[in-house]
Image 1 (cartoon, rainbow, N blue to C red):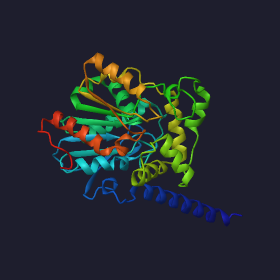
Image 2 (cartoon, rainbow, N blue to C red):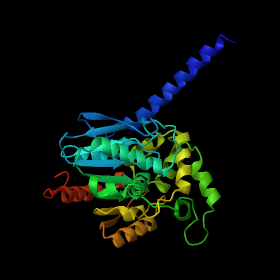
Image 3 (spheres, helix red, strand yellow):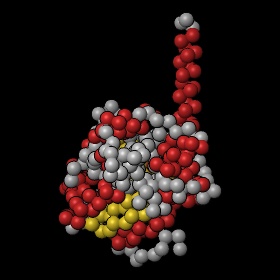
Image 4 (spheres, one colour):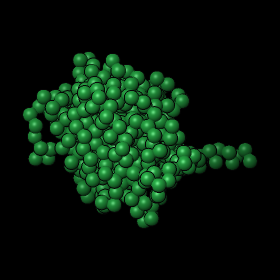
Length: 340
């Protein structure tokens, strides 16, 4: 029996290594659509350690002295989720993307998982990538947008000191279970989704095997049926790269998440983008954020794109054009058309 213990330990380690390699493969696959592929150019690894000692994977693309764009991904994603934006903007800007703790190759850490901790992680990343006196354009998708709102509410004195503009896409400030339309028939004007049912769904360590029924449901409920081919495959592979346990743990966080009026602390020009077919964070969420920004005088624009929840992938050309407009305005650069 004792002789078998090292064998079992080695087998367990080999299985973990194979799983890690598989997840890395899902993040770094290549596609016929080169805009979705990992950036061809070199990148710099920025060393960032969070307050609890968690090591965050942070990549910097583009010229070291370029104007800075920082990208914060959402639930079950990773920094490669931003490939369509990194490929479009890293030739001109210093583009920063990082793995949220527990996602990609970032540590989960030992601190309790709270939105305040994610806000602190973002603060650490900004401090690491922004030289004194430099300010960035900050972009957040889904949980990334919620993290930005939480960061602004937690560190309002940093907003004008570190930012020039913000872009929030497919995100919310709270009440996710009360508004989601992912579950058929619920929250569509007839029956409300019971909180416990929503909590069980979000916190479940769900797997997404790459079989036809799962692919169809993913496109129908998370993306949109208009997302086909490489776009659908890329979105599903990125989400599948997240460990199921991490997916469930962060789903619990999202179930109770409330960033209050954090958006009202975004006192720099802020643009909001929603997806007309987004069942995860329907446009009603964006409209509430827009109301806060309007009252503050910070609203720079509001657009609804014909997408599901992965808007900056599903309609990446339209999204990139909006980000290009924001960046040019923020950094005082004459406008041009991305990809022209």
